[in-house]
Image 1 (tube, helix red, strand yellow):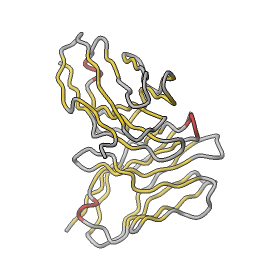
Image 2 (cartoon, chains in turn green, cyan):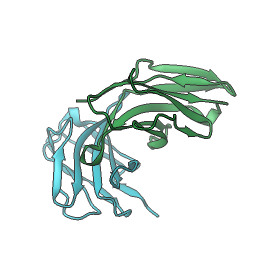
Image 3 (cartoon, one colour):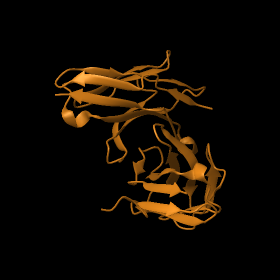
Image 4 (cartoon, chains in turn green, red):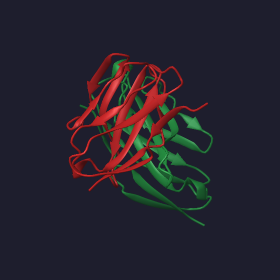
Length: 115
Length: 111
C-alpha cells in the first residue's frame, strides 16, 4: 500500500517571500502521479499542481513549483512571492494509473501568510 | 457547468439513523470516489467506482455502502449512523488518469 507523509503540521511565511512544503511518499510502483491540493477555509479541494513520475522535469504552475526526487521519494512544493490568499491547508497526494487512480493523502500542512 | 454536485451540504443525524449522501457529476467522467476528512486530517478513501455497475472498497469502507447505476450518480449510504462517522464527506470524479474534480463536501454530524 502507498503512504504519504507530511511531517510539518504548520508553517508560516512572510508575504512576498518563498516557502517550501515537504512531502515524502512510499510506493513500489514505478509509474504514478503526485499532487498538491489546496484547501482554504471554504473547504474546497483545489488542485495546485500535478507531477507525472515518468517525467524528470519538475512541474511548474505560475508561482508554484515542485522539487520531485523520485529515488528519494520526495515531492516538495515551493510557493514563490507568497500572497495572503495562499493561506490554507495543503495536502500532498499520491495517485496510481487507471483503476488505481484513487488518491492517498498526507495529513496536510497549515500555511499561514504574515502581512 | 456544475461539475461535481453534493447534497446535502450539512446534516445532523441521530445515532442509528440512516441516510444517503448524493453525488452527481455532469462531466461524463467514468471514475468516481468518496472520501472522508476527519478534523485535522487528510482525506481517506471510502469507496470508488471505475464505471457504472462497478464499485470497490477503499481504505475505510466499514459502515458505508455505494451503488453506481448510472455514469452520473454515485450515492453513499450510511445504514446505522455512529458517532465515529462524524466527518466531512467529499465526492470526486475523474476521466481516466486526469486529475480528480471534487465537490464542495457534506458536513455530517452524528449525535
